[in-house]
Amino acid sequence: MCDASNSTLGVVLGQRAGVSKLVHVIAYASRTMDLAQLNYTATEKELLTIKPDAKPRLIRWMLLLQEFNIEIRDKKGAESSVADRLRRIEKEVDPIPIREEFPDEQLLHNTTPTPWFPNICNFVAASQFPLEASRLYKERLQNNAKYYIWDDPYLWRLCNDQVIRRCIPDTEINSAL
Image 1 (cartoon, rainbow, N blue to C red):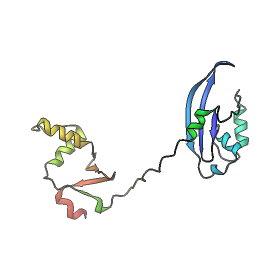
Image 2: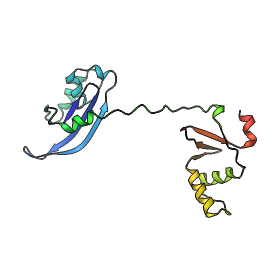
Image 3: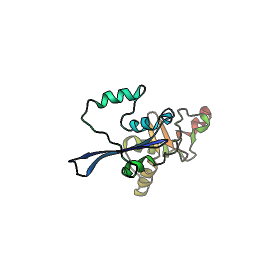
Image 4: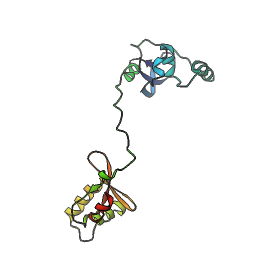
């Protein structure tokens, strides 16, 4: 079963054991169309739910589908309610693009005393706690470690604004900026 609107597609792949038997669902799928597909005719949009392909679409689809013993029947929208519902799912907003560069002004400056650096590095890299650490310090170190990434020889921190910044010791601040 499939359904296509002006901008989205919804598909349910099913199998029927006999002529008067119920359809057993195998898979569900839905997606939005790209800019070129928005210009397709209604028939092409319906066929797009069966086999997405580039030009010449219809001939290739027919040749491909001739290899199989299948029957494709069109159903009214009311009869294919699941496929209709899938095509109506809203598309999520585009995710924030990944920034590949790390400008100098975005380096993370940590003003706490130096001892945090080796402890967090050892825990992130090798899951080792300091020998003299209390239970409370170990718990805090373990909770904080989820925000750090060790990529030898640097320690990186995932900040609240979803930017990964390199941690640098106080002695390297001036040379980094």
